[in-house]
Image 1 (tube, rainbow, N blue to C red):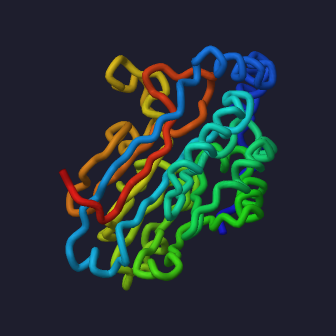
Image 2: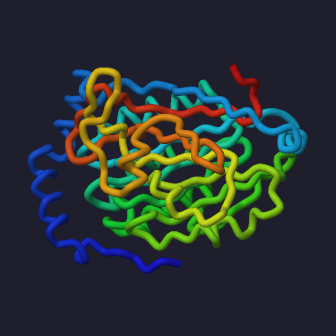
Image 3: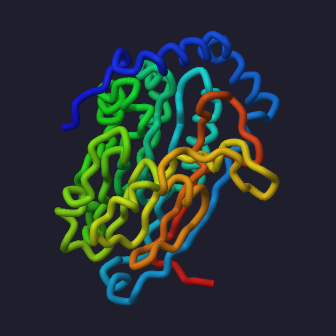
Length: 291
């Protein structure tokens, strides 16, 4: 298990976040922004992955995967967004739910704001999560504990097979690519025999760490789609890291591998504002028909 990070390990960021928290009035600015439409409106984005016949033959039917990332509970995100996400999941009812990290902003204690959502975020084949950079910066232990207490499987450089009748599918999750201790080798080690492998990484930089590992679909967040984007969705701000700069939002075909789906996420980082980058729930059908 990677060593825990404490807030005392990052004094400059900690001071900046204390200042932002004061300016955001402990979340009141975010709640006002939500009411005025400044956090955008949660949307459902749909994708389909056509699988090769041998892989599809190993599945009883197409698999519907839900993916949500970057909730950022705390003063930058109104809790009403989590209710919107929960309602969307209740309507969509994916077979499996993936959570892409960055559950908190500024302080790990804000994971308590997600209690109702995490308790409700249960899919028939399970809910699986990776950890993001903000979780690590703010002390990952309480975040991981809250996820596990809700019955969510936390994947840190390991894989798990889905329950029957989808036992031929493995979810392979890595630690955060830059602030954690990621190992794609360990994450895929137990999935060698799986007919279908799903790669879960907080940031798109996870695909740059692959060393011959193969997946059929990958999911990442972290970028927020820029959070503030030009009309049409071109991000005005991109996080550091070669993968995050290049794979900023949407579906991407990765050479010699499966598609990568990068989500805008749900919450806000830094300031409670989204422009042309609405929060989203991704629903991806693996094994559907193309076209």
